[in-house]
Length: 143
Figure 1 (cartoon, rainbow, N blue to C red):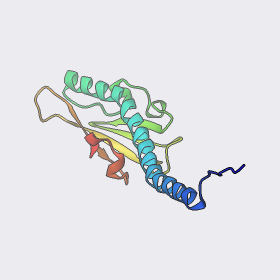
Figure 2 (tube, rainbow, N blue to C red):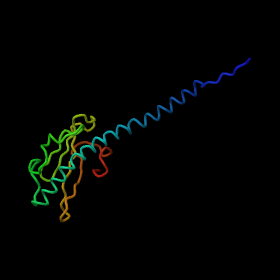
Figure 3 (cartoon, rainbow, N blue to C red):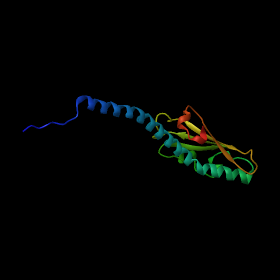
Figure 4 (cartoon, rainbow, N blue to C red):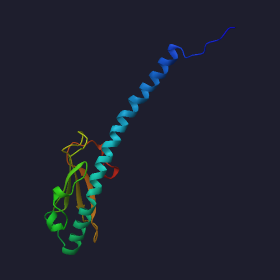
């Protein structure tokens, strides 16, 4: 009785390992960029209440609030999240400070939202990096 053995050869296994290595080399940096973008998105979400409060204050009074208290929102240190350490209001600028458990790429960095009132009766928000955050990590609205 003769039996044929069937198995993978060493070269076939090495090819599979090489393909997995190439895929991992592409996927890991993409995943890191994705996580940083999602952390930045948390800050933009947390700033939503401040944007509404500042816009409403401007529409009612014709001037921008000087700080969080005047805008009617919580103290800057109390508006925080897993990746955001503070959201502060200063006139027509809302500053989002990243910290806490944020990725080291954005830890200590800021994103600023500036009110634009050129259109009558409207407040539009313009987003910009206040530090060295790379454009690829910012949402499309901030690039």
